Length: 138
Image (tube, rainbow, N blue to C red):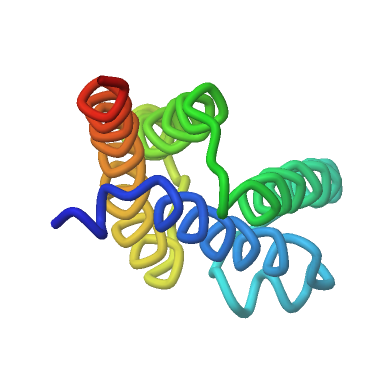
């Protein structure tokens, strides 16, 4: 369990997961539809590209800091992970027709618990690193 709550592991995990999302978001629109099952109009395609760049920057920050993770950055990453999962299920419950295809439903059913788990691991990692600092300052 200690490896799972090590912030270095959490940062590497965030880097890999968000890099995958970023790469999917940067695919041509027709390929995105094939891979994800999303039905995206031209405005949505633009938003997907913006989000892909934001996710790529998050992945890069997590990757660069993975050897010396900062608790403040970890808190920001955890907030995003928890927020992302929450938005996914709220959107699914409140917007008719969203995640309409089987692929889209499967994707969101994987994404929600994955993001909650990553967020929880980061929070536990922050707590564990504080305990480590407290016990090793003496």
